[in-house]
Amino acid sequence: MSERTLVLIKPDGVRRGLAGDVLSRIERKGLRIVAMDMRVVGKDLAETHYAEHAGKPFYGSLVEFITSGPLVAMVVEGPRAIEAFRALDNIVHGSDSPDSAEREIKIFFPDVV
Image: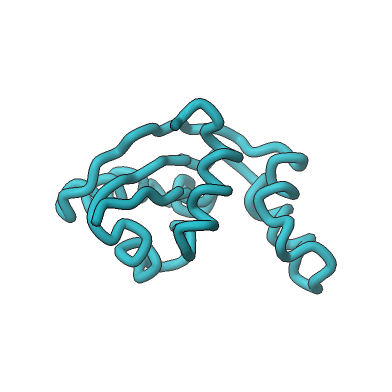
C-alpha cells in the first residue's frame, strides 16, 4: 500500500550538506518526491508543527532549533514511506503515523492533495 509522509531535512542536515544524500536515499528506496521546498520556518509554523509538544520542557528548544536556519521540506510517497524514514537519523524528520503525516503535510504543503 502506498502512503505519503512529510520529510524534513532539518537545519543541521542542510548546514552539513547532507540534503543530496537524503535525496539519494529516497530515490534508492524507489520512493517518489511529490513536493519539495527549501525554506526557513517561522516561529508560527514551527509552533503549529510541534503543537503536540506544547508545554513540555523541550518545546522551546524544538521551536528554536527548527527555526535556526533553512530546511528542506518534502512530501514523499511510496510503499511504507513512513516506516522507511522513521529509521533515518535525527537530521531528518519523518511523520510517525498516517494521521500525523496527513496533518503535517497540510501544514507545510497546503496545496498538495
